[in-house]
Amino acid sequence: MSHTMKRRDFLKLTGISAVTVGSLAVSPFPAPVFSKNANSDSKLNIACIGISNRGGANVDGVMHENIVAICDVDRNYLEAGKKRFPNANAYQDFRKMYDEMADKIDAVVVSTTDHTHAPAALMGMKLGKHCYCEKPLAHRVAEVRQMIVTTKEKNLVTQMGTQIHAEPNYRRVVELIQTGTIGPIRDVHVWCNSAWGGREYTLEGQPVPESLDWDLWLGPAKVRPYHKQYFGGSWRCFWEFGNGAMGDMGCHYMDLPFWALGLRHPLTVEASCATKPDPEMAPANLEVRYTFPATEKNPAISLSWQDGNRKPDIIKKENLPSDWGSGVVFVGEKGLLMADYTRHRLFPEEKFKDFTPPAPFIPDSIGHHKEWTEACKNGGPTTCHFDYSGTLAEAVLLGPVAFKTGKKLEWDPVSLKAVNCPEADQYLKKEYRKGWEI
Image 1: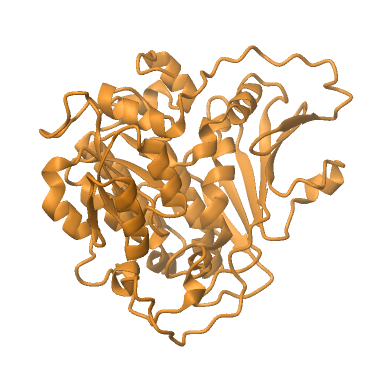
Image 2: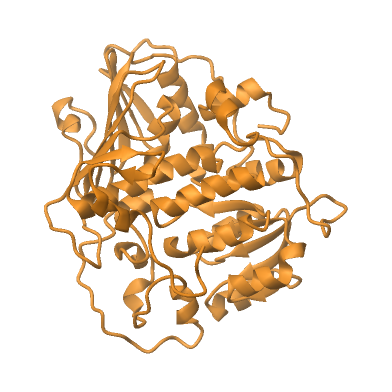
């Protein structure tokens, strides 16, 4: 996809209607914005916050530009990053980085733990910095909405880190759904075998590793003792820092039905689990059910999510492959489509044995990170801009909210409230430690 993509092609690619675009506060094609320190070779000056693990992959994705600042709460990672980028300024505290380098940065990449996504991203966005942020954008629904609003107010180029969105398989699935291969769709089933939760834990502390600034790692979260149980990705198990398996993987797998069916805000959300909510930890298995309103192109949609060792009943009922660990099943009037990251199949197979797929009409991506950096420089589109991906993230984060309340939420996306469940408010937003407010 080049930055010269025509407007109509972008609308087709992202699933945004002309009506939706017309109602946005700003154009979805922000003009290129460079700091006064941008290099003559037109490379972006990028700051990377969180540079290990997933953050390391994101640094690799944007290193074709100028990495002018790196930030990580662990000095070991920071020292390794400094060896890779000797000309970059190194920080443990992104607040200090913004204070000292605000006029030297064009864009920021945020790859921290979920609970610090919004503070790290919004501080830069409010300064007018373009933003690439890992899924699920933020820790709470209200934070995501603030990121969407700030994107429009500041006319920023944004991209959520759902890298699989750029791969060919998802494009082919979207084409099949949108050309009516399996007819009108009323039901979608999404499942993922990840299980971030349901574990034993302790609130007792351990000595803090010498290289780690534990207070900075906690950031906006309530103060608690350090423990190694929060690392190796296991922070996702704890409500204070993550949202379980759904928070980790929901934006990846629910991205496909959102894209293919043009889904936006749900009407209702309810969740169930074999275990009662724990105040500290997410459950090992969660089921969430959404209803979405009918549109001009599609009837009302029922979408289910299951994680851990749960799988949708339709797999057994329709004799679908049982060895797929994660995936999506679209149920249409003319058949079913089953997909995961790299493959897709139509069922019943006998019915579709002579099927010829439509000629591809969604352009190949130039790369998920490259889409964003090119758009920052040339004013073109991205496919996971925050207006699209933020709406997806809001829906994903509503799943844990419904689980915590134990009620079927009737959702009003305008007021950002569950109109039948005022107790949900405490889970939609949160209080921040002094110095970390957004």
